Image 1 (tube, rainbow, N blue to C red):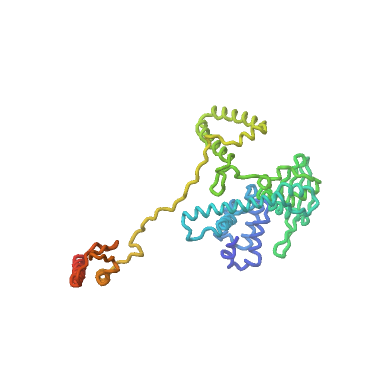
Image 2: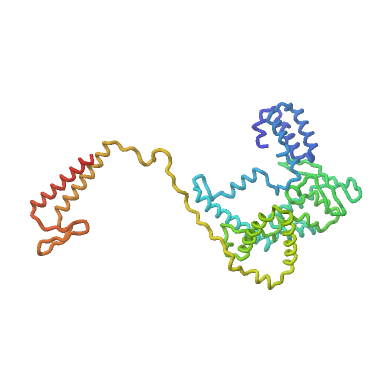
Length: 424
């Protein structure tokens, strides 16, 4: 729908009715037949039968039109929201220059932060309650079991009861049909949308054409309106999903790299049982008889576990000597492999520059030898018998006259010249 302006913006009636007609066909149609009729009507009205883009969208309508996806639970999440939430998950932890090793470490940090935020939210949901906005008893029912965030979503639907008008249409046996006219406000514009609710009085079960509960797991305002008219104060448990409960515990026994569950006895026992069951499942799965026998043993043992005493629970907290926790693996940096071609830091040195460097090195050696000859007292200590003891970088020499010293300096210079010629 974000591409409407790009694909159909050049149409003469895009702003005067085409855009609104497309949105109405998508979001206001209650059945697949109704959508197809509305879609065909707008194609004829605005002469768009030959538009290839709309034709391709219609061929793939079962993958993106909401009316075709009402029977699938999405938890209120779309494909774009999934990618955006993943980008927000790594925001502040990784960037374009992050290495592979840094990504692994930052991934653990991001998971650890997410768990900390969720733990804080669970603590607040258990110790703090959002106030009720209506005097209905089923609001208090959801207030006790739902998390604060999910209870606020439920309250939005509960407040929407004031905008719904409900009328009983027919009643056949235990099945009642209600018409709901919902007044919806969008951008300072108000429209009335018609919905239908089917209510089974015997099983206290209902179904709304908006399918909000089937798609998001939250009861819609239309269903709540029918419950209110039938004076039902406590809703059935099927409308209280466990995934939204504040006392629901998840991934508490699964070992991860961002927490310290390796020292937990429950986590160690859980890992040991899972590994053993996986090996056993691979062994017995080819035979139906073995699988049936295994299921009988499991069901028998499961019934016995329900009668475990407190003493056995205390003893089960101790980990046996054969249970070993896996040690964390240290992640090392990847090997640095030399790339193809000449390294950027090593340029080709011309012959002239090589000669200049060698001359400079020979001149430095000559200057060092001259300095050593001029200041012999700085390199060794003189004793009374004329013998000098050299330092770490010198040798033991005897004191010699100045002529010998000059000759030694000249020999060093000749040696340096010979070294330069040989290297050349």
